[in-house]
Length: 328
Image (cartoon, rainbow, N blue to C red; front, side):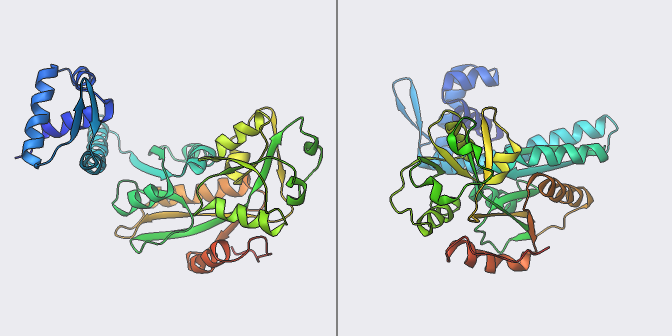
């Protein structure tokens, strides 16, 4: 039989990376933690960690198990927090939000700030994660609300609306092209272009736009987040083409943001679990997200959820840059 102590020990060992560190974290002896891990592996019937001297390497099975254990621990922490609120006589609504790195850094904090100014009964918890993990977390109820970039394809989600805005260029403030009010992609033909690396999301749209401008042999530095690309532009490594939330929401000293003449669309969705109705606190937060997006992004467009398939077709199956009517 699997016990709570065994799962607690596994969570600590996986998170910290060693038996010694886990024992210190749990306030137990190393031998006690090692014994719990051996008992858990015996109960499960598979190995969780491969031992190489004093170093531990988590097996594939351990990674799969940890995903579930982590969700359970998050739920337990939420229960403990609610219990403390009840004991203190409070009646707070805890809202958990998962968002991609750009949205969690450039949009969510501002939206929370706006919500807190008019809602004293809300307690917020948010974290950044890849888009696929946002979808998974909303689907299984690990978070109350998710903000994930398109494409989205999951029947267990309720899409409240879809936001769209244009990508922008970020460059060092002393770059010669910084004198222009806007930049054409043709002006970047001789420039080092900094882009995000996921070929199934924004990178695909950016590449298509650059190729449509006649730039088929451009060089670039790839990274996994827009913020990394912006920081690289600050170090004069090139010109970053990024989504606008990072560019406008996390302004970096020493850089300037310039609109791109050819429209490169970027879209994200506001999601809640399909199996539960969003309460008034979540709906207030969703409303504040839209208010924040409209204030932050010069060309923000709000699409209804019914527009999802058309957006998928336009963004990922056709050449970007074509004009599109706004939908409110």
